[in-house]
Amino acid sequence: MRLKREGDWLLLGRGKSSEVFRIGNGEVVKIFHPAVSDEMIDREMTAATLASSLGLPTAAPRARVEVEGERALIYPEISGISITRAIRKQPLSAASLLRQMAGLLHSVHTPSASGLRTVKSVLQTDIDYGPAPERLKSAARDYLARLPESSHILHGDFHIDNILVSGSGLVILDWAKAAIGAPAADAVRSEMLMRFGEGPADPVTNIWRGWAAGQLGHAYHKQSGLTPDQLSQWRPVVALAWLRARPPVREKAFTRYLNKALRKAGLPSFS
Image (cartoon, rainbow, N blue to C red; front, top):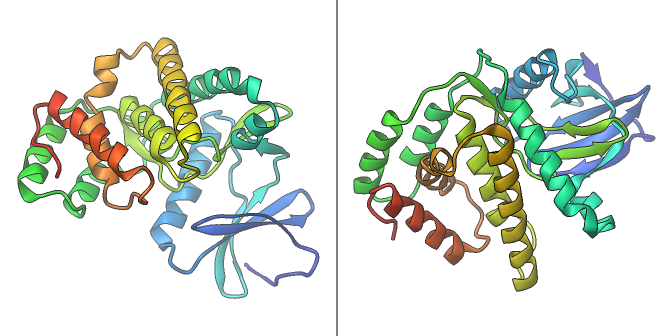
């Protein structure tokens, strides 16, 4: 199906990989930038459809289309604001929203699933193509191979800009980085995104980021039943994999975080 951009389309958001427009009739179109791979678009469509079929609060794409030669997906429109905006509007709601976010992440991890790449393969590829020295890569490969296998759906990019606060509750967006594997890997990545993801990195915000990451991690631990040790065993490889494409936000703090996780796992340090 091919669409033509119309003058009354309203731009709702713009990110690193796409732009989203309201196109009427209760629908939005997500137009991907040329650099985005077909594989990522296919994965988003497959994973979002799978998540919706499992009863998770998300929107399944209705169609894959072209908009004047650009690849796109059509989704039903969901009215709401991101958790980021909700916290900015009502800062005292932060703790409650973070607890709800942890519960939502646990609900994502509850059902078993298939049909997506494995999180171990994702981490392995990112470590192999990342900047770590070969000695560390080799040790990390062996460590990763020993970690437990699992078959749960993982979002892969679960952060406060990818969750909407709607009239019916929280809704998850953007499944392009989804995978199958151990829930702890996804939970650790979510905590890392809170601490070190894109966004302001001034001293006051960094203190808030640390507090929010702690709130999220503690609430997830309570709701999922996973122990801190079960979560922390994934931290060195998730952090090491993130080096492949991580933007330079709080670089020194992230390196300290990474090396602490590596030392705890008995792995060589990153320098």
